[in-house]
Image (tube, rainbow, N blue to C red; front, side):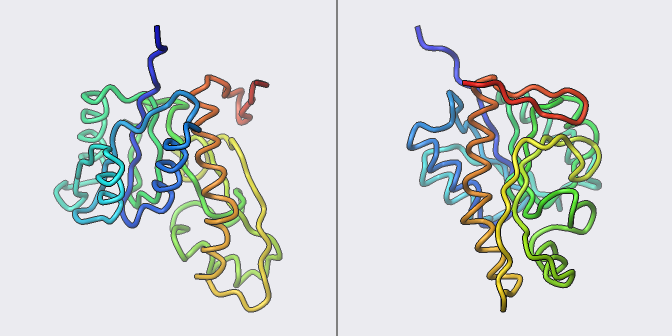
Length: 213
């Protein structure tokens, strides 16, 4: 008898490069007993929805513009996730700050990837290229990516995994973004999802404990 798979929803807003990394990992059988059951976009026409369709994953749209507030959208999202019987929520370039209803419904079951080494260059306003602009302006020699559980504090949840990536002379925000995606984000996010789906992650205070295989 097959064990029941962990049903995953990936929340997106744009191109879906991190979604693609997850889809590729799933195709290789590397999601640790998880399956991507839904891709939910906050924007109509997001290319991530095309990636989902190409992989045979159902796509849904909850346009942020259709709701009067982030809270109204969050409530609708939670209803959708429950209807789809989702156990793990992954934020992969989703440009909406969700309110407490999502965290309340999925405690330590929401994973986000952030393109910097938290606690550097994170929190409100640090998203997309803004993160890399800030890192370059500060003159850091290392940046990277962080995968963490989501709490009500923006980018403030317990850290699952981090990887440092060198900042090179002559980098632009775009070149740094590309290097961090390729060398860190696309590696860390599928691994973290796999660990969750294997039941190997637990949280004690601010610390994520990874159970040995």
